[in-house]
Length: 145
Image (cartoon, rainbow, N blue to C red; front, side, top):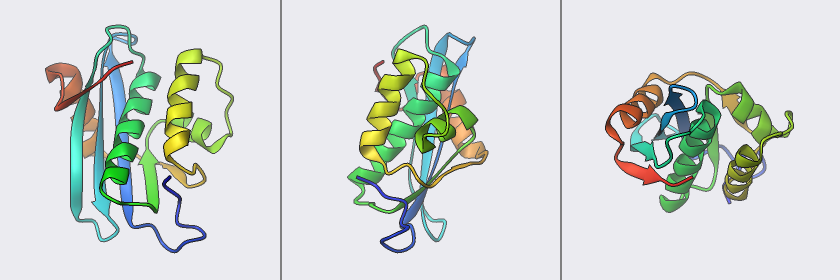
């Protein structure tokens, strides 16, 4: 599990995630950027979503989940997570209820990967570009909803 670094020191890396669908719902894509604490690039990915009725919120969760999986695969255990989706950030913090079973399933998957105390809302243009590339071109990887 990834923690926020609060009890175990400062974060080792920052994860930026984004996702979207065109139209909404429609063809979805997501992206993430993983940087070490000094801002050096670790990994990035544009993720196509194999479902033609994806919502923006589902796509945001896919960006988060695939980014968290990448961080774990890279041995990162203390992570700062940033995304521009108020809904996803607040659901991960437990501040918003989840009223949709599809989002609840995705939230549960993300919660299994992360301690949700340090999620921050912020726009990242590279993560946004990766998500839009995945919508247009199918992405570097595929996530099945």
